Amino acid sequence: MRPVRLYRSTPFRLALAFGVLFVLGFLVSGLVTYQFLKRELMATLDTSVAEMYSVTTSNYAPNDMEDLVSAIEAYGKHPAPDARIFSLVDGAGRRIAGNITAPKLPDGLSSITAWDIGIADDTVFRVFSGAVGPNRLTVGRSLSETDDFEDIAVLSFGWSALLTIIFAAVGGIILATRAQKRLDGVVDTMVDISNGHMQARIPVSGRRDDIDLLSIRINDALERLSRLVESMRQVSADIAHDLKTPLNRLKITIEDAIERNEKGKPVGDLLADAFWESDQINATFDALLRISQIEAGGRKVRFRSVDLVDVMAEVAEIYADVAEDNGQTLTLANPPASDCRVLGDRELLTQLFVNLVENAINHGPPGTRIGLALDVDGNKVTATVRDTGPGIPLEERENVFRRLYRLDKSRSTPGSGLGLSLVQAIAELHMGEIQLSDNAPGLVVSLILPVVLPADF
Image (cartoon, rainbow, N blue to C red; front, side, top):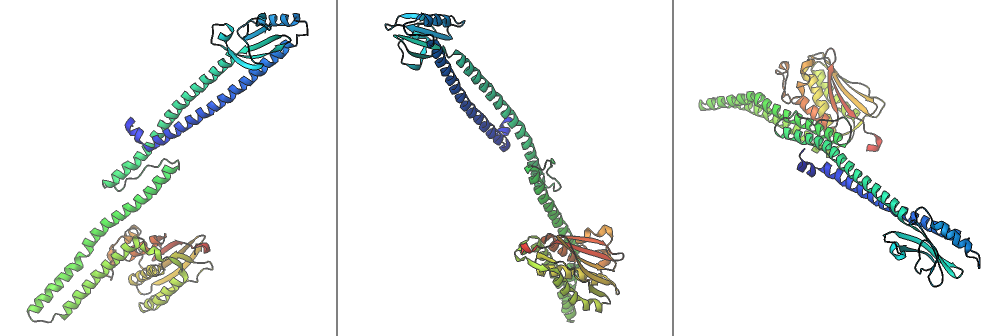
């Protein structure tokens, strides 16, 4: 990935932002820790200097300076004379004992520099000064050890901050590059789709993270889009193929009517035939428009709680006599004890079962038995329409849901080949599934819908 493109990528900028925040947090916490550490070191040093003053003055007795002077001289011979200082001066400021001559200082703790005691150095001393009889005693320790410790702490924090920045930058680049590659997969897939490669899909890593979930959702949408585009292509081809014949018949009928009219012959029967042909063509286009409207999802605003038992009972009552007139039988099995309510459009669900029953009646010979049944399993309700008719070959069961598709043996019967397409559109609108299976002999059409829980309505 080119640096400019990497810098502009959202994952890298997020990683960089979090890295900067992490480093700032580390530096702030390090600074706070350093200040606490420095304060504790100074408090420890002050305590040590005060104790050193107390130990030294313990050697003093009134009118007896010998022990105090001996102690100061002994303490002043420390291997590192610049680390500890001792000064005992008289009232005139003349040195009595010690390794330095301290300037006049206030009682208690204070700080002085090496220049203040005649040492050519930049060392700072923490001292404790006070009166010992007629004289003045000053003891102190340099801040060199404290400064060394602070330098080590600052150096440690500095290296830690540098390593943190490096790790944050490298980690951000790695994470951003991996995330950007996955986002590039999304972009590449969209480009392929826009170029007409409708089968292109976004790769899924299997980590089940947010990008995977987004990719799965987009792939689902692309799958539906692919099916819709393929359906539109198929519909265009089917319309051109299947409507060509009735349009030609309509044209021939009108030409015959014109020719008869010119010869003074009656044309009423031809006009009736033309009207019937145009009516069939209009019905086909109405069905196509109805399917498109259903697929658009606009009817979902009319969804209510619908009892499938009532819907199937109504369809069975209406078509029982039609089946009987056709030499067939239509029965409705006893409904299950469980609730068979679904969320949907009652009119469309009724149309779905009407289409299935009419298909069974129209394509079944006399003696065909048609049965309607309902079954509830958990949160799913299955409505079945089974018959003992000719059935549908296994290799044709996917094709029959295509618009305007008709089996060769069904072309002699009335219809436009849109009945099962409408059934599938209604089922998908209701988040359901249509399954075709063998009834041996005949066909079983199963509609599986989610049950509506009482809390949902």
